[in-house]
Amino acid sequence: MADSKASIPTELGTEKIGKLLKQYALPAIIAQTAASLYNMVDSIFIGQGVGPLAISGLAVTFPLMNLSTAFGTLVGAGAATMLSVLLGQRNYKAANKVLGNVVSLNIIIGLVFMALALIFIDPILYFFGASANTLPYAKEYMRIILYGNIITHLYFGLNAAMRSSGHPKKAMTLTIFTVVFNTILDPIFIFVFDMGIAGAAWATVLAQTVAMIVVMKHFSNRNSAFHFEKGIFKLDIRVAKDSLAIGMGPFLMNAAACLVTLFINQQLRDYSGDLGIGAFGICNRFIFMFIMICMGLNQGMQPIAGYNYGARQYSRVREVFWMTAKLAMVVTTICFAIGMFIPRLAAGIFTHDETLLAMSVDGLRILTLGFPIVGFQMIGTNFFQSLGMVKKSVILSLSRQILFLLPLLYVLPFWHGANGVWMSFPISDVLSALLTAILLRRLFRKFNMLKDGDEPSVLGSQL
Image 1 (tube, one colour):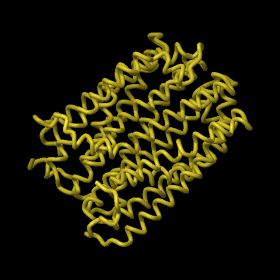
Image 2: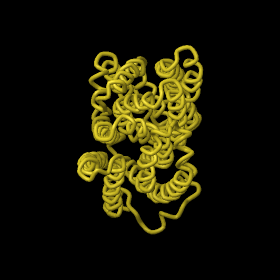
Image 3: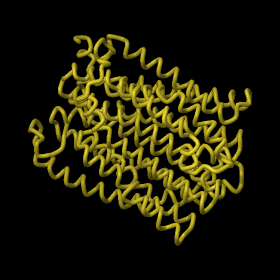
Image 4: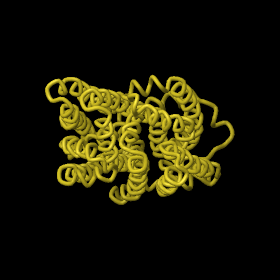
């Protein structure tokens, strides 16, 4: 492992935080922005090339895709955090074992999810808000995406491991490649080959397949910090348990997003029909771009915070949090400004149907009301995960969507109809940000009791 140790990014514990955050977050931001464009591209070409009902059919698939993503992050996010902390502890043998379990767990979970979802595809999509008009579009798209489910899980899981092992630019380049390749294939499959919504799905699967082959080749190189070797693919129950426990926060957040989107679709179908679901799909795709930028900041913060926590450099842990939180709030405030002042320009990218466009504009204005503080809440949640503080991360992951948003989605439409669905979001944003602030205040009071190098027992839950 001598070569691997030589390439370990030990500057995480010595370089200036601002420089490190730029080095790690910028590639992740570009990658996550590219990933959000990846989703937007499908929606734009489907909306412009197939029609408004196809947009609604695509929106119906969001809960199932969120659930698939949840299982992928259950493995990938947990493994990435473990790798970062193990780097700080110089435990390279354990880190390599984590890498092997990323592959094993993703294959097992990906196969089970694909099989169950394909068997029950019709009732699942109806449950998620499909109607007789939108089911054919949703089913045609989702079946193809599910065929490539294992590929998706492996690619995203190994891409996260690549980023955490000191290759953020390479991870970013791969993500950008998938977007560019998908963007090239989409119009060819949809317009030239006249494949409709199925063309968008095949473009997605093929782009991710090529990217997965590249990332697998990267980890086959013995000069990498971590690489595939004999014996690491055997499922290690202890490693799997720790990885899944740490990844439980983002898993529950994505699973909650699935549940919430399901309920949103059902409420909008009842109060404003299929086009209401399509309007939410458009707003969701637009907002998702800014959420993904914040996720990129999270991914940049995660190895820095995890490494320095493992190395007991608490002053650096505090510094990286506050720097990241401020940047995230700038990003979400920009989203707020666009939603307030030029929502028609944003929504018009996806559709020219006047009814769908008008509904999307109204929804976007309401959805983004509380967005300036969403960045703070996202960074706070991920900060606890980065330190391995699972319980707090899980609480914050669930607070916005389950504790606050779901009850509001049920109650407000009784008085305000479809607008009540939209109004639930800014209210839950404010409440969850307040809860995040309370838990962070308690954590930093404990941090202030520690000097760099002290045992972190005062902090409670940890790796």
